[in-house]
Length: 340
Image (cartoon, rainbow, N blue to C red; front, top):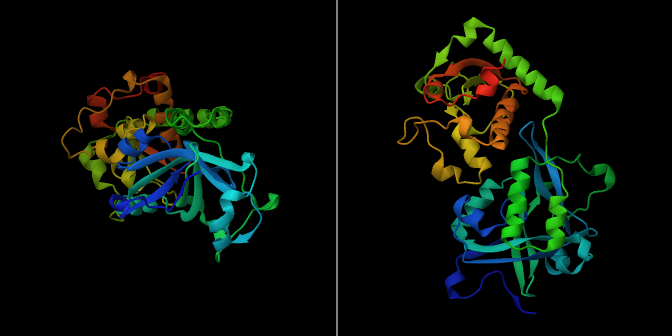
């Protein structure tokens, strides 16, 4: 068994290791969606942690992968030295260790700001050991230099991953050739399905919009929508999903990138595992038109679009208008607009 520090060779002096166990497993995902340039990519395990899904964005992405410790409480220095030795094979976390330039790691760390990067011992399937691989650990499990194992009373209610997110993990595990037992574990998880009562309420709100001439006759352009990005108090944030322009509730959190934007293309890119930074296009940029034709999307993609509208409406949002460019480009969701 070969053991090495977190950096290897002169060419890697300004690179650091990170470990992916959720959406950051496959090499293709790291390159095309995360825009990273791994120098090395290994698959294997880190022992002493278990995978679970934590509640996330209601109605659309209600569960993201997280981990919690399953070793007894130790100080952080002792864990750095010994965490990989404790626990049975059932307590092994499978995924990929990837070596990336320090600047890219800093950017990834900012994206994962709700986690702490914890130096850990990684063991590849081929037996190589790498010390100090950065593992993204929820901050609540590390405090004052100690790792805490939650008791049953302190564990949060589990979340349920979306179909998009779970498939991303499953595809990544297969592409990276993780162990068959781990792939079976991922395949055994259920994904989120919109409850009937939630969907009925959504369709009811859409029906109310179409039955209200004051709102349904109102048509916004992208130029108008873009001004409602929340930068001015007089123009609170609005978001368009397909043909529907929704005012965001003042108490609801949404991504800054959504505000004043038609997110249909962005949602589809996200569902398809493509880079948002590279491929999402704002209204005043070349290539924004034509908007995606929802009629050409798969059933699963259309469902994901509707769930993205759902998360706005069920958190206090209101449909206030239709989007002109979406209608002109044939981007309406016809099964919604015509059947109601």
